[in-house]
Image (tube, rainbow, N blue to C red; front, side):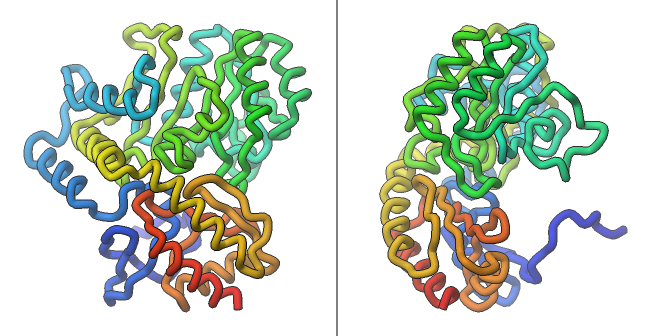
Length: 374
């Protein structure tokens, strides 16, 4: 049996990770400035994480959600306290796409409506409902395509207000910072206007924080830089630092009933152990403030490099453009300088290192990038 081709692959296989580095089978060390799509939040193989997951696997790896699981409540308590959303409700799932699917479903149940407002450049996942609100026709199959989603330009306040004024929308869904689109952050004024328009029209506001959340921008969630509170917040990626887990944070005014939502693997014991360990490390090592501090330092260093254009982002979610082929630059960084980065279009480099990154790592990256650009 062969593997179904999904991504074009680099001919390199990391087999071990340690902190902000990965190693291939020959022992070559690579600086990881992409974190596997922002998944590696507390660094590779953090000792506390390894111990927590190992102990849980040796104790009880799984049982169904038809019985109590105190680890789920531990996540809810710690996540609520660290994020400032301790009055919200938590539904645990397995991925970001699944989180967005369920957020859309809850919004539709709550409002009795079916239409959704989304934004140009959005990426919310590849499953049925999530891909419908993703602005990429190439990955929307005929089965997924419906007429229930309207896209407006990110930042177009008048178009957004005009659509929501109809009263037909169950939800508006927006990323804290658009990642796949190339690190595009909506203005605070626009996000605040969106919150006001949703409130006025009885529309649920969904903040997709799958990539931009969990401390990456120097606040727990990116939208907290704007001062608003959504009705639903979705998370995943950095939540489990490699173990699949996601969640939906649901405002207290939205009521649930038994059977409304469900999941087999969501919130399983191993996933919960991983997620609890991530929150422990984030708190004890001050990783949210570290993301703000090192992110500012890295941005300052990047701004001084000739060839770095349109520098943008917040904290450790950074994008910039180059004049030439970004894919060629990324290959040079991997094979000539042993650094992993991400891309987003023909000319964009995307940086999503672990929140444990230091100024030393930033300097190492700047040296490699400068050499690769030269």
